[in-house]
Length: 270
Image 1 (spheres, rainbow, N blue to C red):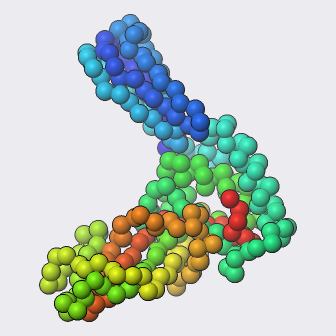
Image 2: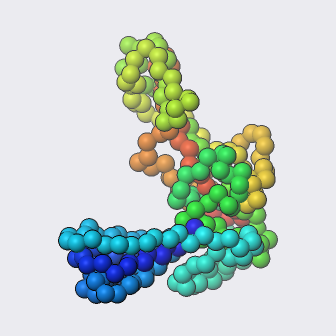
């Protein structure tokens, strides 16, 4: 899906304004004054923020269609013209990376960029076909530039594990574990896990790496990342963990986020 079409059929109503925003532009569209005798059509791309105000009187009769991109993977996704300047700037930065013109580079020549949506490992087996919304625009645009300049792009799950001493851990001797996935739920002894006093150890890894066709590039093991390999540098800030474990005074928390990555020579691209 790359866009939505909203068709308002003749019907008398008031209210229901549509507010659309993209980049620095915001517009309010009101079909109500001419709604009894006219048909109106509105369309927006998936990366355009939109808000539909409530109907204050009458009834609105509308049809909504999702526009699906069915061309071959080599054909670029439809996109807004405003990103053209950004594409040119990105191409220049990647060319500078390729020519080793950045003075500071990470030890691991890899950059991981966070996607907006969250995908399972099963989803990622479909490669770029599993992506939706702004993720499709982003990856399709980057893929065209990367292939032109000789970079590699893939999809993966980003996982961060944090461990440290638990608060009041001396009063507990039973194991606690919870997860937001029903098939992993396990609760033993009590229902409220103690908090973590401080972080003693933290690791961030890439799991289940595939190319844009869904073919596995990392069937076993993990790739450990540093903060300089990530955009943003702290993608887990202010996010609740997917899973927490407590055992004999030590707390563990696990976050998982999907990302796509491209092999590069530096981390200061953006």
